[in-house]
Image 1 (cartoon, rainbow, N blue to C red):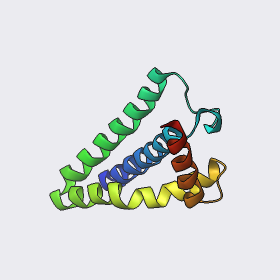
Image 2: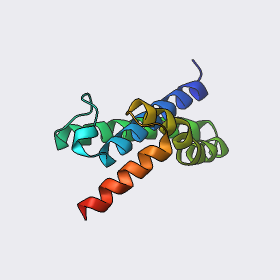
Image 3: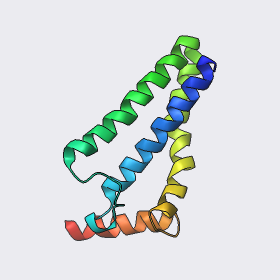
Image 4: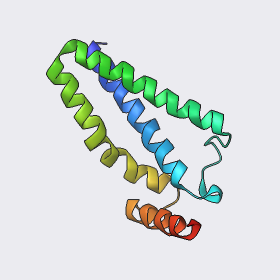
Length: 112
């Protein structure tokens, strides 16, 4: 497997875990999936996992080429959320991403 492929796979895995963790953190306690960790220490471990995967992937990309690293970082933060979040919203039991956003905004409004 080439370093470019390794970098892409690490960044894809980091993006998936990152989006999943972010979306689960915004859900009310009763709507979070059973397999998402409840204790704060385990949630921190999930966040540390995506961060380490991201750092390893972006490091590989920058080692190959500065331009590749910049493009990979931009794609990670701009494009990957649009790839992963709609299917994750459906997996979490929402009709679509808009339904998820509306639900979390309503919940946020009630907690204030």
